[in-house]
Length: 248
Image (tube, rainbow, N blue to C red; front, side):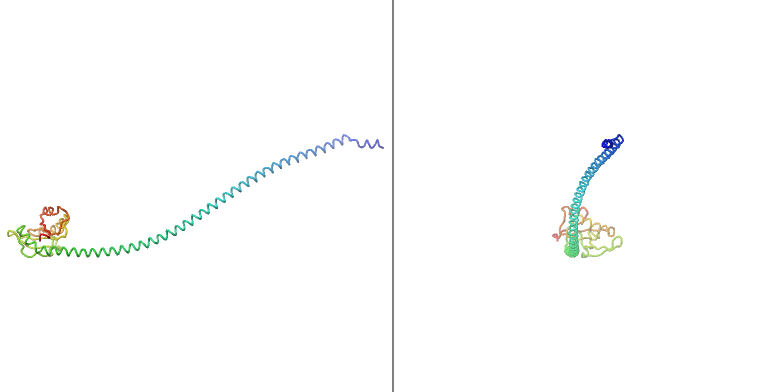
């Protein structure tokens, strides 16, 4: 019996093959598991690297966000500053507008005052001119008789005559006279200060307008003073007699 049992416990070739197959199968499974574990480690490592990159990216985004917030804060500050500056500018514009109104009002007042002054000066100038003419009416007859042998036939006066176009022309000093039996018309004007332009103006506005209306015209200018040193010679060149107030 014991011999029979011992024979039953022997490993038969068939059993040996079966055991070997089982062991090989287990070894294959173990290798697969190891391979899977290795691959899993690689995946975990990749995930860890990806996590690091993600965290780095998050930090970069956080930094960018911080810079954006700082930039936004600066922009908001700049906008507030601009708004404040705009308020100051608007206030300044209002002040300038008000100042402009005051300036315009003052200018209008000055214009009105200047106009009034011109009117007064014009009146004063006319008064001075009339006074000079009045003195000339008395003195010129003797002066013309002394210097040119001209005899005044009637008193000198202011009057209107018609020019070549039939338009009334005011003559400040007018009178009829004679020289050696020849009729002469005295045409004169008084200017408080005489210039060469004043001489030309007298010729243009008075003498030229009545040229040819009388047989002979004797032009005369009277003044308090001349404004240029050569005015007297200029008048003589134009055949105009010139007298000063101190001649009277």
